[in-house]
Length: 285
Image 1: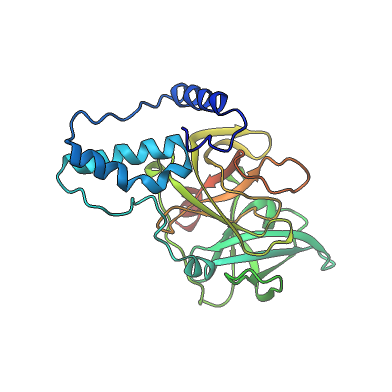
Image 2: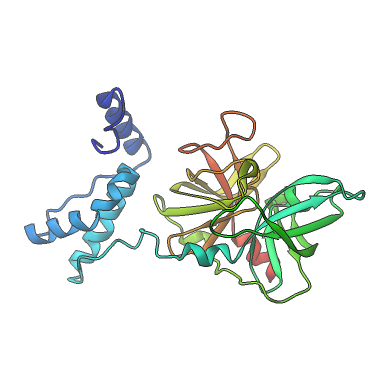
């Protein structure tokens, strides 16, 4: 708590708020009465780098490492929650989606991720609205240059409007699809990485953690009893349809909605919503 509140103007108040949030969410502090001093020190050392992610993440790390210690398999390795995915490889599956009306006038754009060799997943509010007649897919490099180029024409093939999940298809079979992880396997406090194209920043990436998981999330016109991941990785206008990855680079959701402080502004540490990648699997099936 001291680490998380070290830059707060009122550290005591900050720590009290953390305690209240921790208890209200049903968490319990990990204890070490089952471990010897050597095991306890090793557990704490293995989770040292997780402290900066906050009380919940740090406590979850201690719980995981304690369980490993009790099996006699504890070693001084980085915790699995530290990302092991190669961000350069993730960008090979990531795209900017430009949409146009019947007169080829731009209607805006969003983000997308390859889920098969010729299919890209995105939000329906990006590529599946009635006004969209033309869809262009742009490559975005991991060095996030401002210049991007259209490489494919695409067409809408399948949609789940209720879950804001749409699939668009290209003619070539040369995409690099990502692996998809089931919603039911997700845990609170897990590391996540978002990639998107917010406010004209092509290939913006940010990290955070899962703050909540809801199987029947309902909000306004966007969600109606949907599987939704609530996280705090920074997203913004243009991130819609962009991938949310776990620490191994598995796709767990499509970023769909973020609560901003102003029109299209990026928000960190706020409430951002991603619809589960389970809906992509349903459409692919």
